[in-house]
Amino acid sequence: MTEDSRFVLDPATHDLHGDNAKLREAGPLVPVTAEGVPAWAATRHATLLTVLTHPSLSRELRHWSPDARDRMPPGTAIDRIVTDTSLLNAEGEVHRRLRAPLAAAFGARRLERLRPRIEALTANLIDRLAERPPDEPVDLRLEFAYPLPREVISELIGIPAAHQDELHRLTDAVAQVGGSPDDTPDLRKALLDLLDQIIDERRDTPGEDLITDLFALREQDGGRLSEDELFATIELLFIAGHVTTVNLITNAIGALLNVPGQLDLLRSGQCPVSAAVEETLRWDSPIAYFPMRYAVRDIEIDGVHLHAGEPVLACFAAAGRDPDQYGDDAGRFDLTRPPSTHLSFGHGPHFCLGAPLARLEAEVALTALFEAFPQIKAAAPAEELAPLDTLLGNSTRSMPVLLGPRAR
Ligand code: HEM
Image (cartoon, rainbow, N blue to C red; front, side, top):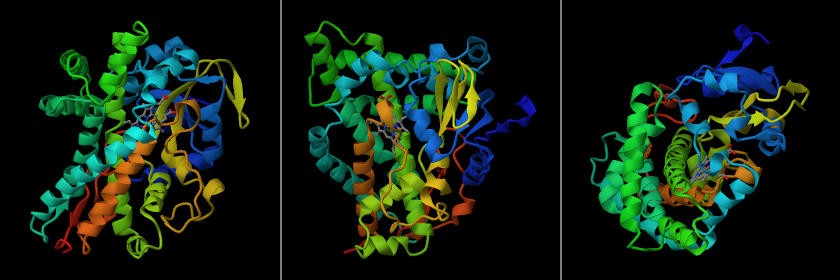
């Protein structure tokens, strides 16, 4: 395959799902260029499943062929993900050691305790929305989908209220790098300095949160988790736990308001809110493309030969609309679709730790929103909303709606 015949992934595309249909048709693994980086794209459901669990594909950066790695443009979204030093890019024993301490924080007990807080935070946001004139457009991405996961993840991790705004300003900036690579090292340093300060402050104030759990673990077994690993974990959770959930809530609102008949299925009780969340995850995955896994030796997947050191990109939004998996109407958002597994939270050892939390947040948020505003409707046609300008996320930059009067 020559450089010229590669598909170039466009972060600013207005037709992600159209682009993905072409990729799926082109083959099980398709040569693409993503932010200047050549990679194989896994776009079909069955192939993506193989890729996510393949014993000879690794997330460890050291397996990427050095000359290709050295040519990676700095400061891009891909650069940020592949150089992350948390559990995300660890394998085997190291991965298990880094992942195990987080299990309690994301387990059923801690989540059930968090539920009333999520409901209270949602109720506050709804109260604020209800103060707005009912016939003026409100951007629900900015004023509803964005603040909820941000406050939840801050509480779960244990970020003191005084630092939350600054921490979010910095993580948002780091998460959206791409345009101005020169800023990245400074932003990253400011972020690490702030995390340093927060962690230092929290040493003497234990609570029911992740920072406290991780401290306790370090004390118990003589620092199994290094300081750097602790930082990387908290930074990952902050970024992974926020923007993805914002996209999920935004995309679910957009689908329910724009696809005729679907909101009625929810309101009439014919379909549970969990069906809306799962169908959104499948049909409009919050993650478009996720880098990278590397072939640790020459391998063949679905008839395609990969050389050792070549990277593979996971295409979650493409797999969610694969007709081979979901039938000819895979492109239709339909809450009555029989439940089927999607891959939008990944699969295998790196399966998303925050999946139960993201589901809980989205269910609470959608239930409260549609109960509070029975006449809510979209304030702009879906196709006019600008997409996020990133390869990683799949959503729109805004979600303008007319709320109408609040239910009594
Ligand atoms: C709708 C929201 C979310 C989506 C769609 C999502 C999706 C994903 C996916 C696809 C992966 C696997 C990546 C891979 O295998 O290459 C992943 C991993 C991960 N996610 Fe999520 N995520 C979401 C929310 C969250 C939340 C709320 C948190 C935490 C608060 C979180 C924390 C993580 C972590 C820590 C990993 C790495 C797990 C590991 O490497 O073992 N995610 N997520």
